[in-house]
Image (cartoon, rainbow, N blue to C red):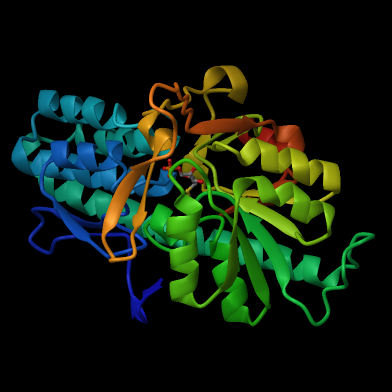
Length: 369
Ligand code: MRU
């Protein structure tokens, strides 16, 4: 997608095959900082400290981490250590372990001297596949939006003719969270390209504000109409007929369709359910964890530092990015980074294979879909 009119991706390997370059998302929206990661431990730190974030992107970045390990020391023990290091960087998004497992499954059967070349090309394949999968999610999501735009609206909601389709999203599931396109925002970008008028309500997404700092930035760069709202505003807008559709991303979807995503997603799903607003989850199949059923009990929810809550950073009047304390000294803070939305609250899953219901997912998992 575009930054200052130029086509960009969120990560790219060096042509010399000795590093991977990433956009340091901690610096956005105030500056576009690029970082070079040249070892598996640098990749691990970039994931843990959220220079890169978003489930598909941490998977692709970790794949390049394994490739860097292969260039440095391609023996079995080194590869297994690198896998454990990367897998431990963040616990919730399944794409991370999906990517490292895919790398090791392909590399371990090879003789060590062949591993580096194979690893770089498989990491490239994972990154390119992510772009293609997200483009497909975008096409299926666009069809859904076109159908919604053509259908009669619900009681109390203004007819769509002559106005934009209002989509609400949470966190950042745009191109910055993937290699390109994004998941939840891919349909929005495809709608823009297809000439379907769309406006995005962007949840600020406390405490790290991925909506306010990342989603708003990438939509602005792409010229998509959007408005940032406080996390508490979505239900109010839904009650007033100002949200036609919710689309969010996912960090892990269970075999029965429970969805784990950024903290606050569940509350949006409840409000959407109560107001009859369609609530869709955009997810590549790399986000599906077939090994578990119950999202509430079987997913490790990342607990992040209370400092993300007690402090906030932004640009001051002199243009300097600075951090300030929000809370009284000594007040404890709790910071679970994700929550689980039960499958019953999800209208459908927008995947690269089409829009599926939770029941479709169960059938596919049983090999019958
Ligand atoms: O903690 P983050 O910023 O990595 O969380 C990201 C999200 O929750 C996204 O919604 C999810 O990864 C989907 S990304 C396409």
